[in-house]
Length: 253
Image (cartoon, rainbow, N blue to C red; front, side, top):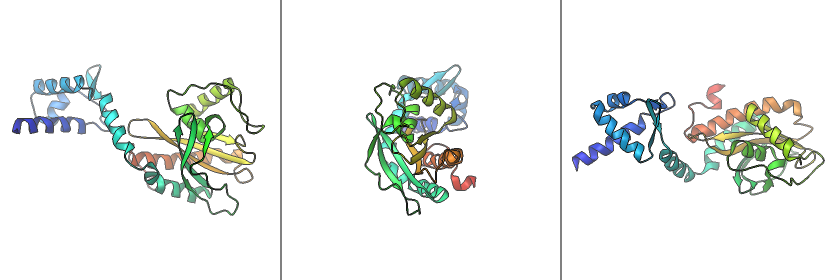
């Protein structure tokens, strides 16, 4: 029993040794961490590789797909909306506009969280509402940063500004991936504009889209870059809650 517990403890020590500053470890580094001979560390690493908890990268080792799978299961059991609440309220206070948290639901965007701005003229309650991916800022973010969702037509038109060309949408998604944010200028509803950014978890998976929405007379396209910057700061805080990164908007000022 003692040997079994010692072996289990060593496994946990190996997995815990990986972090943002040590994404890859050599067998020698693992041996030093455990205080064991290099041959013992090598056998342990081989077992973890065979089980999918580690994978080899040239001469080093990194966390494998099985760690990602278990991590996602654990994160899935946490209330994403509750984890995002502080960041959403911060973003709402900074922008004075309505903030939404949305996730991918099949071929649609599902709004799961909202923080309302102080203005009398707002956009109403969108919690529980679904929209198509191609005509909303948060939908474009989810399309751009979530794999396995090809862009296919036909694309339904909601206003004169809605992008209905598959070729044009693909080009826009490439630009979104480059600049790391998306916008919507009256494409879903006339007079309603929005900016959205991806929210990544510890595995680098896009878990949600965080957006700021408001009427066009307050949210002109010229305001988008600054709003995107604020959204990205808030998204980093949510990512921090999900185990990614070590900073928050308050810490960054």
